[in-house]
Image (cartoon, rainbow, N blue to C red; front, top):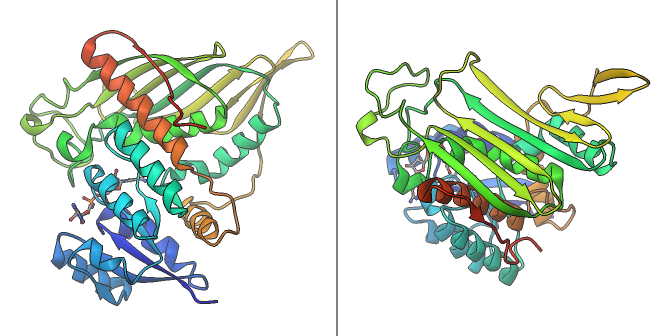
Length: 353
Ligand SMILES: NC(=O)c1ccc[n+]([C@@H]2O[C@H](COP(=O)([O-])OP(=O)(O)OC[C@H]3O[C@@H](n4cnc5c(N)ncnc54)[C@H](O)[C@@H]3O)[C@@H](O)[C@H]2O)c1
């Protein structure tokens, strides 16, 4: 069987640290054949560093030479490149978030349906051991019906000081669209079939707009900072469950990082990081931790494997486009709610089938 030919578009931090190393480990199935980046010098350097043979000046030129692409550009370009690739009959693994707007996400999902090619979004948290374990627990119905979900993706003072993360035009938002999206995606995936009906959100950027703040991840220009650095959201679902979401790059909490999803159900509860099952049983309050769980230490390889196997028709895709589109639609509603100062009634409108 000939190897699947993969090309990467946008070969900055995430392409080099996660995707290229993961696909290189799948050398029996995959060959990384090409790269494209608007920064041609970077394209040359990275191609040399990883022994990738072809460098293309435009992403369209790459399409004749690959079976699949990985999109790692700033968020603004995800939709355009993904739709063009799908129309050219190429499978797409696109970095998160899926796109800047729910409208673009829908167009991407439709392009995937029409082409019959695979489109997945790199919500890699789903491939973490703890998350896989939590999904098994949820599928087994062990905690009963979920009632309240608490989602936290909090960094105390870690605004990315590199790239274009603080630029709204290119990224669409800040802490929510960049970081909170991962934990929001994984919590929705754990809940499974759930229909948001109303959303309220507040976004902040007071700290990052203030000169001279402490930041552990390099320097950025407060005057050009036009995204959110702290966001809260409240989501009501049609079955009566609700979600409290909080995400930040910058705040004044005690901890350096808080990252967790907790689901409290009518029979028990679970925490994902660290993994714990919580019960009230036999007159006691019991929390159980796993002493071992299967899976890889890093989620990058299982993510790449699932994408490749889905392209080869060997495995069901884990991160489906409709699910990633729903995450973007919820984030859009949180931003909209904050902008208009009231809640937003929510309709999936067929995005999730
Ligand atoms: N999965 C994760 O945890 C994770 C972490 C960081 C970033 N990301 C996502 O990955 C993407 C890239 O982030 P990054 O950290 O690698 O950023 P980066 O700035 O390090 O790299 C982006 C690269 O894209 C190139 N580029 C910009 N516009 C382009 C275009 N129109 N066509 C081709 N190349 C273009 C830039 O020259 C740069 O080399 C973003 O969508 C971001 O949200 C995901």
